[in-house]
Amino acid sequence: MTMNRRDFVQVAGLAGGGFLLTLYAPKAGASDATAEPWAPNAFLRLDPDGTVTITVARSDMGQG
Image (cartoon, rainbow, N blue to C red; front, side, top):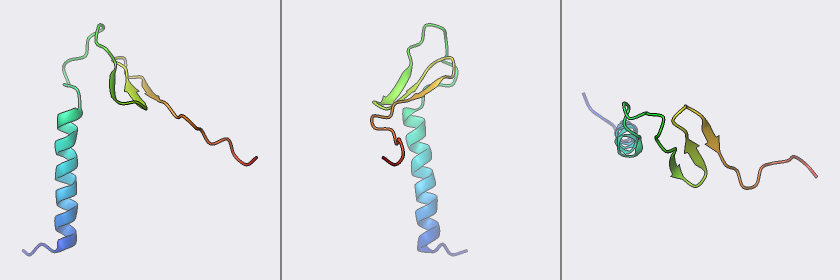
């Protein structure tokens, strides 16, 4: 079986994305009531109870 360039880029991207998720994701069994929210950047926060908060500095309000 031969692998062309497009297949290689797709597989490498999936493997790299999975690797990054394992580095930055919190541990699966580490959810307790005293845990702090996980904030990977300034715009996203994941609370221990499952609440996801996304902060948008300039929301789109439409025309005018």
